[in-house]
Image (cartoon, rainbow, N blue to C red):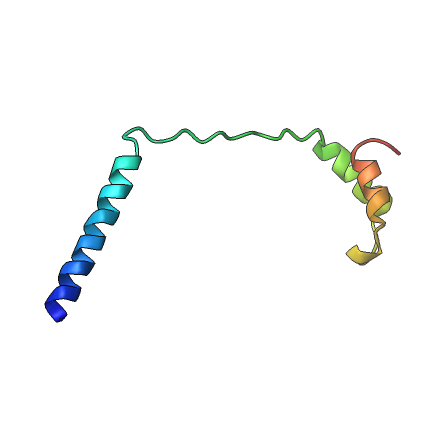
Length: 73
């Protein structure tokens, strides 16, 4: 029984190895990476920080902060 289980598990392992190597290609797949450019400059951030600074971060109005960063104020 032990010999049967050993042979059976080795057969399954061999089938797994064959299945993964047959389906894979030799060339690595190219990964598409998109770079997101930010339009926010350091000066804009500092302007908004000076304008909307509060003692605690949770006191800053998020909508007002976003509008200021994107120049919509």
